[in-house]
Image (tube, rainbow, N blue to C red):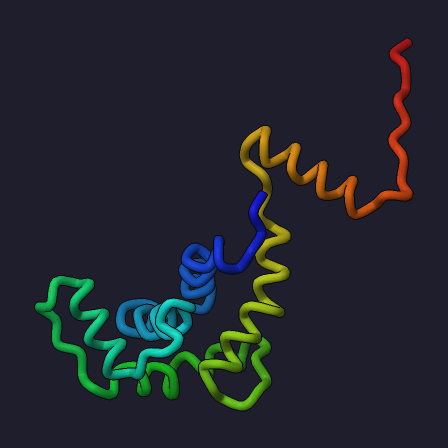
Length: 137
């Protein structure tokens, strides 16, 4: 099973937005600012992109993203263990390397192939372990 951050990023950020109670504009500011594909975009470029993705009929105040992060997102994340200097990059690192590691452990394989891949990976990571076949009685 693919356990990379890049593979799970969309679902992970959606799940974190739900967990932390971000909705509406806070959800948009949280998820869109953290997506790796948007890492180089300024807040105004990001607002334009969000508006275009939603049909171009929305009006987002120019300070929506900064206000969401300063008034809602940072304080909420700090209540949930974020302790670094306030920056989107620090939040991205914290989510990716601390929170995601715990999150992905709870994702269970869903197909037979994923189960076999997990078993294979486990066997590769434990070369000194051996399997014992116990005959039926």
